[in-house]
Structure formats: structure tokens, C-alpha cells
Amino acid sequence: MATTFNFKRVYVWELPVRLFHWVTVFSMLVLTITGFIIADPPAINTNVEATNSHWFGYVRAIHFITAYLLIANSIFRLYWAFAGNQFANWRNFIPYTKKGLKNIFHVLKVDIFLMEDKEHKLHNISIGHNYLAAFSYFIMALFFIVQVVTGLALIADTSDWWFPNMFKWVSNMLGGDILTRYIHHILTWVFMAFAIIHVYLVLFHDYVEARGEASSMFSGFKFIRSERVKETESEIIKRATEQMREGKTIETDIEETKE
Amino acid sequence: MSNSSKKMKTYYESIIEKGYSRRDFIKFTTYMTAFMGFEASMIGQVTKAMETKKRIPVIWVHFQECTGCSESFIRSDHPLVADLILDHISLDYTETLMAASGHNAEEAKQESMKENYGNYILVVEGAIPMKDDGVYCSIGGRTAIDILKESAAGAAAILTFGSCSSWGGVQAAHPNPTGSVPVDAIIKDKPIIRVPGCPPIAEVMTGVVMHYATFGRLPELDSLGRPKQFYGKRVHDTCYRRPNFDAGLYAESFDSQEAKDGYCLYKLGCRGPVSYNACGSMGWNNGVSFPIKSGYPCIGCSEPDFWDNSPFTERLMNIPGIGIESSADTIGKVTVGVAAGAAVVHALATNIAKKKELREAEECGEENERNIKA
Image (cartoon, rainbow over all chains, first blue to last red; front, side, top):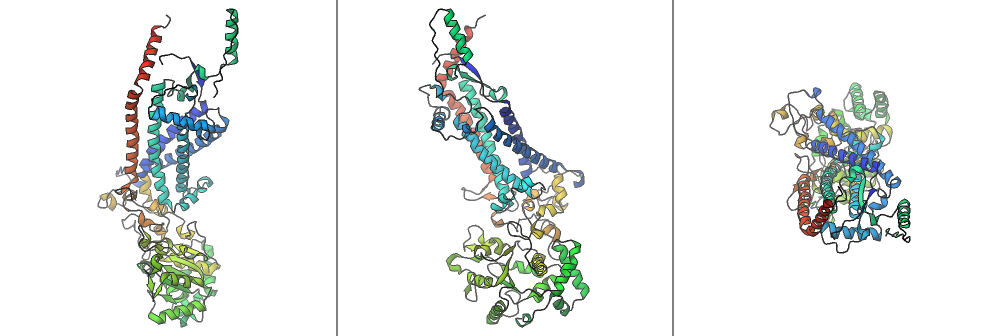
């Protein structure tokens, strides 16, 4: 397969998607760090009077503010799953079609178990998310909902705002704040494990496929084989004109690349 | 004993009869109004109710328990608190504190229940074992299940005093060998007010009974069935060590100078931030102290299944059943480690399995590089 293909620039990640991604990265970092400090604060015991120090209070404040930022960010992303382009659409994230399931199988085979891709089929090239990655984000979103409602349930009793108070029932359902807090703590580890795997697999794709997987989250562009992308009208006209000039018969090989 | 309840007196009458002055009575109603969480303007209404309302009979039954709740109760703050329940409201039946015993006591209870059918408050202390037809707790040859059902039939409301009757308590802790359950697992058709704690604060019971006497209805409960005026705040929020928490001043061991200086016990596993109770504002033993004030972290004794959340001196409880007992953090570290390890292994495997593909891509790229037009 020592062939060089022609690649086309595809605008995959719109600016809102990229912003969402980096706000999430920032929030998760802050939340994990402050979260672990809250779970097990370092005892920096100085001779300062309690009245004159409030650092732990500020750590908690940062945790809460960042949590609200991430919630707002996620609500926005939920909206964008309907308003955004085809790669941001909610349909990507749930493999409910035969196509999606087949793609998951393919990704598992070729990318996870590293088996040889005997037949390079065009439709196996994922332009946006591959279905397995997208499904993993969906699972994480579910975990995130649990993380949010347990967090809000824990803050409800000390908050005057109706929003966190809406989630007090979570704590009651779980039989008190102790288990609620525990679940909130455990899920942090799940997100950490996910982040490691996610970053690794992005680098893996970038390394093996060299299509700009990692940089796409900054620029928004990925590079896709031109056969996979339908020709635009202007391109067809341009080519046809050239062929006419060269005295050839006009042949447009508009491929039906959309599987 | 049973004779005394024949002719019902008002609270005021029986208190005066007992030898207290009106001044004592007013002090008591003022004090209880504050405890119930009302404004000072409510003192008049509470006092009026105590003067005019007939006493509410209380039947107090004991099942699987250590009787610590009764111990806590008889050490209540104001002497009238205990007197009101034990001597005046009714001491028709309570195994621990009544003078009568054997058949006489049982008869007195039956009589009182018949006489006050539909009006008395049933106080339950202790859990009820369900396994093997409930043989693990029998009184007078009858199982706790029988006694509870019989006593609850004529009750206006049930007050579960202590964590055992509220959540199951220590005998319901894992693995719960006698199949113990709280009252609400058996009695479904009566209003149940949970007064959990191990032991609970005595004034809470008096507060609930007085609330019922004053307003003719039960106090507002939180969603776990606990009276809001006593269980509405976390121990953490009324804790006098709270400023140390916000300032990040923690004791890390019990024998440290920090512990002596009254630093926050958060790192010693204090359950204050997740426990709802009135300890910080009311205290035990005439309001002298509560665990944190005495230097020991809160163990969350008013929370459901608190016994299973051990160790008490650690912030995270153990997860039993996964080989050795380990905390969530141990498992978390292993998970993250496995994820990172898998990534490394996968990266190495990629270079082996995709060797051909990668080399071809590289060669192809180099060739194109050579052919770049100048």
C-alpha cells in the first residue's frame, strides 16, 4: 500500500465544539485537583488564627464555581448536539444503526486489537468521531450526569439556590450524604482513567493515520482522503473545462462515496 | 401506674401537682419553644397549649437494643423534659423504667392501650429481628414482631427513638445475622417520626410530643422522615470547630498538639459534613458536650446504616468483598495504573503489529519529499 493519496481539508470541529472541549479539559483538571484536596486536605498547620485564614474555604469555592462552569458548558454542548454540524450531532454518540455497530467492530479489530486491515474500505475511514470513541463519550456523559447530581445533592443543604436544591432527592434515594459523597469520589477516578485512555488513543490515531487527529482539536481541520469526500460542483466544472480544453470527452466520475 | 392515667390531666395541672412552681413551668415552655425552633412570639401559644391540652399517653416499647437511648433520655437537659414523658405524659409501659414487672406490667400495658386506643404515641426503641419468625427477640414469650404490630394498631403516631428502630442499627449492620429491620419495614399505615442517633438527643422526643400537643399535628419532617427542626442542619454547620475547617487547620492524630488546640477533625474521619443532627447546638448531658467537643470525630450516628461506613477514623470507608478490604482510593489508583499501563503496552504493540504499515507510509513520505519541486 505504498501509495500516496490525495487528502482534503475537512472542517470537522466547529469553534463551539473546540471551546467545549478545552473548557471541559480545564474544568476537569481544576475539579480533580480541588476535589482531591477537599477529600484529603494537606494539614498545613501554621500558628495563624482560624479567623485570619480561609484557604480551604477558597478551594471549595473554586471547586463549586468550576463545577457550575462545567455544567453550563455541558448544557451548551447538549444544545450543540442538535444545532451543530454532522460531526457534532447527537446521532454520532449512540451506535443505534447497523452502520454504527459495524464501525465499532472495525475499530475494535483494527485499532484496539491491532489486527491487519486487509481490505481498506473507504467507508471505514471515520471523519469525525469513530463510533467506538463517540460511544465512550456518551458513557462518560452518563457518568458525568451522576457526578453532577451527586455533587449538587451534596451542596444542596448549604445552598439557597433552587437549582442544587432540586437534586436533594438523590441523597435521600441513596440513603444519606455518606454514600452520595462516596460515589462522587469514586467517579473522579473513572474520569481520570478515561482521560488517560482518551489522550493515548488520540495520539495513537495521529501516529498511525497521520491525519491531524491531535491538532484537529485546535484547528478544527482533519485531512481526509479525497475519494472519501464528494467533489464539489466547482471542482467538477473545473475538471470538465480542462478536459474540454484538452479535447477529451467529458467524463465525470462522481463517485457515490456516501455509503 | 395504670391508675394514674385513668383521669387525664392537663400538662400544667400535672406539673404543678408534682411540686414545680409556675415559674418553672414558664421557664420550661420557653426553653422548649426555643428547642422546637420557634420564634419567641410562639411561647404564649405553647404555654397555653400546655395549660389546656390533655396529656398525651406514651407507650414505650423496647426491642433489639442496648437501652442507651433510654440512658440518654433520662439525662435530658431540663428536669421537666424527662418528667413530662416519664411521669406525666404517661409511664404506662416502658420495660426499662417502670416499677412493675411480669404479668402486672403486661396487663397495665394492655389496659392502657385499650383505654387510649387511637390516641397514644408509641415510642419504639430497638430494631425488630425478622429471621426465623423473629425468635431472636422475644419478651414475655412473644416475638418483637407480634408486640410491635399489636402496639402500633392503636397508636396515633409512632416515634422511632434511636438509630435501631429508625434504620436497623448495629444489629442490622452487615451481615445482619438476625435479619433486623427498622419499624417502617413492618408498620406501613401509621405516621412514623424518625429520631435517629446513637443515642439521640432526649429533647427531640419531648419536642416532638410537645409539638403534637400544641398544634395537634406532627412536626414537619425531612425527606428521610426526621423532624426538620432538629435534623435540618448538618453537624458540620453548627460545629464550633468549623472555622478551623475553612482555615485548613486540621488535627492528623489524636495525640497531637493540634487535637489539643481544637483543630478540625475532618482528617480523622469526622462525618460532620455528611450527618444531620442538632448535636452542635444542643449537646448531651445537660448540654455539656457532644463527641466533637470531647475531641472525637462525629461517626454520623444519625445517618442510615452508619455502622457499615467503617473505619470511623478514615474519610473513606472500606469496600468489602473485593478480596481484601480496600478503600476506593486504592481501587482508583489501580484502575488509573492499569489504564496507563494498557496505553504503554498498546503503544508498543502498535509499533510491532503496524510495523509494515508504518514503514510503508514513511517510505512513501520520503519519496514524495525527494520529488518536491524546487
